[in-house]
Length: 148
Image (cartoon, rainbow, N blue to C red; front, side):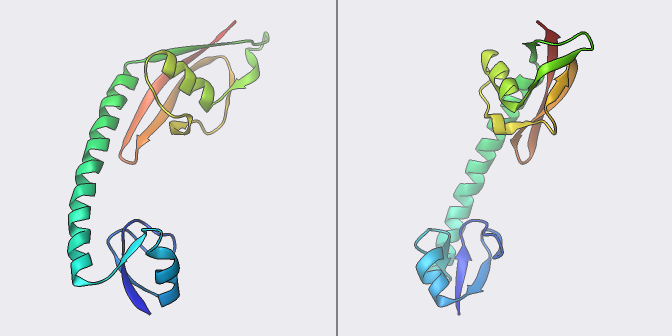
């Protein structure tokens, strides 16, 4: 068994920065070559502290960018035109990709994976859709689904 410092969260092992004991072969053949962990030496502990400070600064920048984007999204309202029958039921459905594309047309670049839509929209109406930009930053966009 050998002790390693995790550089990133590892499923079933621990969180970034933790010192964990693993089998020699697992550390030597997988964790260290993939850059997931360092051997737990005094030098590597110092190296991890420097890396952690750099990562914290980077995460703060990402959070600030996400917050700025969230403010922009909260001021946007998007219209999606779709075909529907007399009961206001859509012939298709509005998905995350439709919402991401509509936001892109408004000048807001997001990935479709950021759109939180528990079920596709299947009726005409006004919906508040959550956008997950960062683990600590979420935004909400108003989506108007109107008849073609």
